[in-house]
Image 1 (cartoon, rainbow, N blue to C red):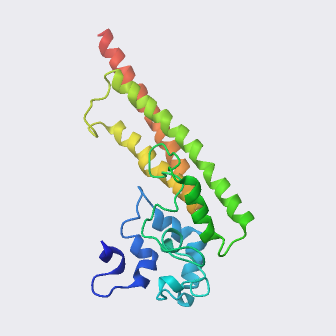
Image 2: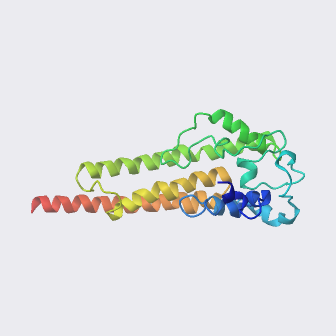
Image 3: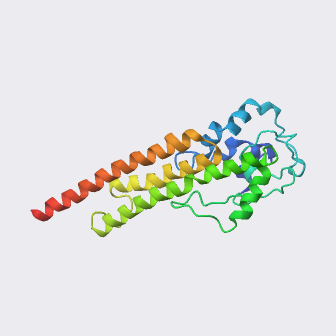
Length: 230
């Protein structure tokens, strides 16, 4: 729907390039992209240099001379320098970061090259490659934590300690939040340059949920054992 990004009364390219427009959907604990962007160096630079950005320039003419600080659309959609514009926001994404357990997308290598081409308009290749390398480290560690939680959840169901109905027991909300809120935030924070979200709004929260989940699981099993003996 074009109007979601460009507006209904004035078809605005500038509106589509402004982060708060993307934030009308991409915000909050389950996909905190706007908050992560605002914390990142790119987000800070955009706030500082907002008046120096030409957000109205035609997509086919856009260069770093017009917009020297990227916004969401710059990286995910814009034609910039030698890159072509796209409305497929997944075209430059290498991983399914939104999934409970993240895997590479089928076009991962091509997507990475496409995104790096945007990065290279401002950054050296050594910087870009190192950033990608460090960001990707968050995936296996997060996957491991999510898989451990999924395993425990299956075990509790198999033991008859959880019903098949969703969200009718407190521990189910914690299993869900562990990956849906905090696991996603770890990964998005890593790939968007939001260190505080990777750590304190991500890894810390995953650990807190896991410790509470373990205690709740012990209680469920203890109560079942007590009832069995009675």
